[in-house]
Image 1 (spheres, helix red, strand yellow):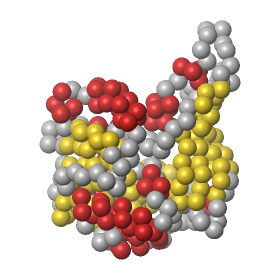
Image 2 (image 1 turned 180 degrees about the vertical axis):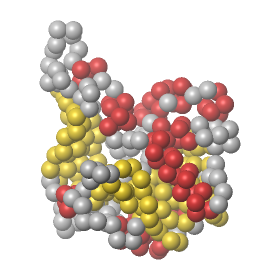
Image 3 (image 1 turned 90 degrees about the horizontal axis):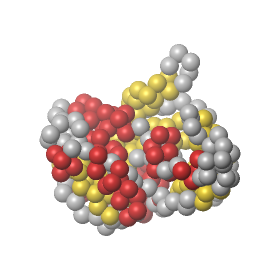
Length: 279
């Protein structure tokens, strides 16, 4: 997970602390950004479809709170997970609030490692996932190829890599998008984009009904990679059959959460897709 800056803009309420001051940014992030159940189910089902067997070992790079790694261990007593993140604070939060809430058997099957994903050494896994666009921190082709090559080596002979990506013509805009939840508003802020370098700066803010805010709860500096570039880099790193899984739509034209292989995609204003490649 990216480095975070918890700049809380307080406005005193009758009860003392504001909603922003009482909030936990990691809980807010998971509620507004992540859906680990769908991610893990997609990894499990897609691997089974590709390989004809169950994937039991999963490595979650840039794992943050390690919620996906924890969820993975719930599939069976044979499922194990490794979470890798460079941020000691967020890993400690995950140990206390996610791993610590599992039963002893599942706790024993989750290992969290504080390390740069470029340096970490782990046993080979069936699957490795890098979600929430975190791998976009690598902004040059040589760096991305180096990262993908290290993942290739860290997978079992029939292993599979799982990534996600976003795009669409709104992805290149400097803009803010607000999404309302029951007790807060999530603000995705595309603060800056450079068309020459492809670098983008993004922030996540949270606003609350009492007018308090958490500004720049999370900040990211990425390259806005395109799907053809990612597929080409995977091939150059030794992977086979890089495939884009595109989300279907419901009767209202909204995403239905069902991702299937698609060679073309659609020119939507904004989309999220998975990229899957085989060792």
